[in-house]
Length: 323
Ligand SMILES: [Fe+2]
Image (cartoon, rainbow, N blue to C red; front, side, top):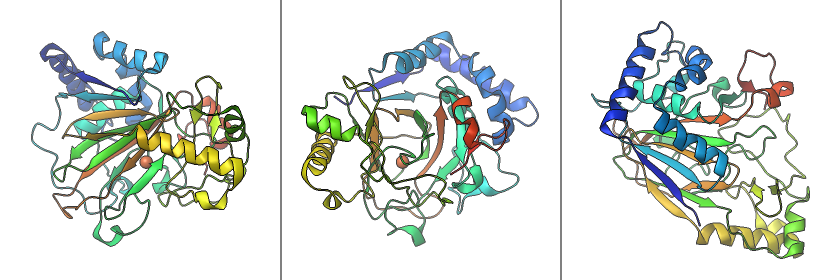
């Protein structure tokens, strides 16, 4: 039920993509994440039509839980040492070719967004295990503990439709786990309860929120009842706090996710886009190589419309949503 669409670039597509990347990188300012994202949608239209078609079908048809793109002509000289901190917070933070290509692909699905509560509204977030964070639950900088199933930014009304990751390094072969809600079997009263505003959805530690979002009394399901969308953070959910039909429905949903999970081992330069309305994701614990050889992913999330979040952004120009 959790199906991943795999796209491997052909020789010809690689040449075209590399040509476009060289052109983008040559333009002044394009390695700055904010300047780049303002032009990413424009440049993305110059990716080969065969690639754009796969992305459009992924978005339009909602058949696949995720889209994995491999064979990307980037990181030809390697990724460099894994950073020791959150480099996206530095003034001169510079995007590599892999991150630029990832941003172009994602811009075929929507607009890159950030949250004011997450690393200063940075659009790109580096996901790296740090020794001091090893045992912090549900942290993107952790590794020792499982990071449970969650929808990215599930707590927030402006949560993105797509979660994008590009793999800079994964020598530990840590698995990215996915599970789709497709095929969920619920009794009518279970479905009803999950469509009601009766559940708490909390934020993960990466968000340093200012409590502008009401995390209590949220629905878990939304959209159409024949093929519902989901927002849940099982990583912070205590099923024991619920009883009766609420608990029964939650347990059924979580069992569905466990039974339908698939694992991806991302290779260097792989780009993956997860449907964040139909799919939860998780990361199992792993033995991290701390330091320059540590697992290193870069994440950007994409929303189909910036306008929908306008009331939660301080200006038209900013992509950082208040949280
Ligand atoms: Fe996540």
